[in-house]
Length: 622
Image (cartoon, rainbow, N blue to C red):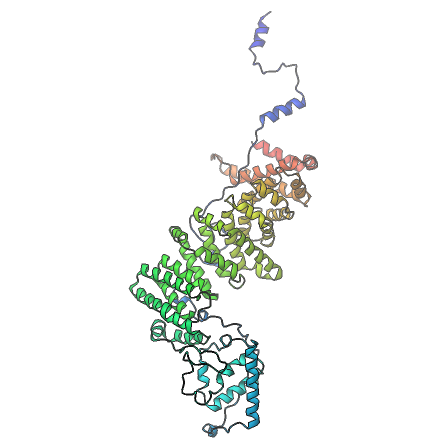
């Protein structure tokens, strides 16, 4: 009789009696105890082995993007940009004015009669009015209005009386009697008797306004030998811009000898000597207040520096580029200099050159001071350089200290504002530019000190707005999702992003537009999962958007089917990490679980047959 009792004692202690039935609560509690929390990992971002403007995963085709490889020569630069800006440039005339007809051939040798006394008196009154205007500062300096064709004002004195009269008649026909440009007539007034024998450009001489004239504007023999006849002509045009005697002395004593040394070192192709001389030239120009467009002989300097590009030294190239940027080139020359720096930065071993040079400051100044619409391609290469350098951990910290987050976010805001005004913001070049910009911000987001900067500059809301504008650009959307997936992993940034009400509609639009772009979808769903993890308001805001749950369920269905097809193809393959498709499924289910915590949303999801069916389908595959 005791045997059955011994048999019962041999049963496992945890085996319940057959007669005892479990309640629903007990079943749920047991299942709950069996569950464990699975922390969702942020999607892995691969790093490109090659430094290119657009990586191997870019959606842009090779013929629809700027090249990463190119050649640069001295002939690539334009010498017209070398001349300093002489104030306001005139816009072209709407029509070509008709020049006065030439006098008959038989009158060419006839000397015109002197002016009648009344006309001479009128000219005298006109001259006195002009002098009064000058004394009150109403007329701009003649350096701002001299012609750009390189002609010397002194040549007007050498004209025949007939040709000078024709010139005055031509000015009158254009209706410029009251125009400040007529200030050049001051220099056309004949010298007083007894002054003709004096050199009008000697330092001791003064013009009719009592202004001390500069030394002779003729270029020296050294300048002619250095730069050739074409550049000398440009130099003459530059010298007409009121170079002071002190500036001329400083040029002849300090600057010109360095340019001669550069020519000698260039012939010897001594890179170390060239680097030292260029560095010295930069210091001399800075000490003489001749940087930017303040140097009257800027053309000569730039022409010399452009030739150094042919040397092919990366170290020398950075020093030359820094000096050229300090001289404020524009247009094609700015583009070529940005290309030169970009070309050097493509080699990772050259990162040390950028660490020992302040060229990054010059690039940041370009982004702040130049017009992004007029120089969009130059900005692409400038930002491409910064993107490459941000891959270096040491330089990345330097970029953060140089206010790179603030500068890049401000540039992004400017592009968006331009898009509101016109279509220029959404142009192809702007898209290329923003790919480089957002890739740099993606690297900066890795640094913990960058997070307060992103929040303080409202960068999270700006990035969401960028998604709306460039919703069709996969590269921009992917970079933005990478930035936000990093930042939303931290509570401070996650709360700031949740306060941006428009972000939910932006993310839903991305999911609808790029359903099959797996690396983009997985990041957007991960961001939404972070937002709804601990924030009830975020759950409500997401749920309020039309078709939000429908979009999630469609994602779940689409990738469940894709996962089933992939399992048939790769039956024997096993991986320690989940595949991209499985990772998307994990993050979609996590998002649904976060939403179901809300009482109202959870009830609706439980009543949604499609949702329950899909979840059961996922469980059946485990």
